[in-house]
Amino acid sequence: MTSTGMNMMSKIIFYEDRNFQGRNYECMSDCPDMSSYLSRCHSCRVERGCFMVYDRNNYMGNQYFMRRGEYSDFQSMFNMSETIRSCRMIPMYRGNYRMKIYERENFGGQMHELMDDCDNIMDRYRMNNCMSCNVMDGHWLMYEQAQYRGRMMYLRPGEYRNFMNMGQSGMRFMSMKRITDSCY
Image (cartoon, rainbow, N blue to C red; front, side):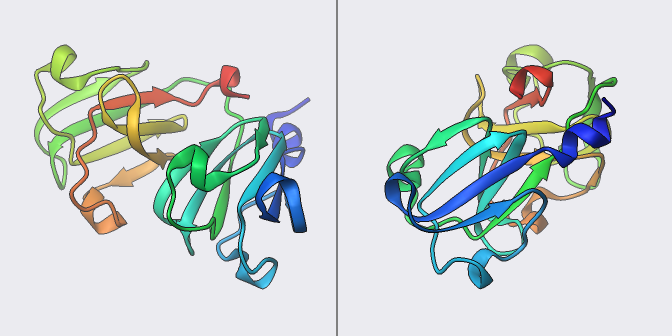
């Protein structure tokens, strides 16, 4: 089966209330604004694939990675004060992974190229900050703390010149992880 065929099978079901109660909305692609389908969202089931969910419309705000499984109460599980407002499907990818990370915005300062996970940029590269990056291949999660902890941000191929302009002001990214087949 092609990767496109596998992506079409991705499916997440959102529920208005905790424990999969209330009205629901089935989603198999990106959804920038869930308010036209549900007044709120407090639980979900990921039946196939992986998704990023956001606590603001248009893929903004805090982000949470969802793989196959049941999430009965977002607020308790992720210490959220808000409800889920948008979601983005993460396509399955079976190729090389490559990303350049930069110490400063606009690709300035120290630069290092990654092709695998990095649990701590300070230990590996002696970088105390990552303010921009260029994702050449693959899909990645960046974490604000070492060892893949804290708030996260999903990155697909493209240039990211300034994380502060992406609604991530004040965040420093200290670890990066590839989204691989094992995430599915």
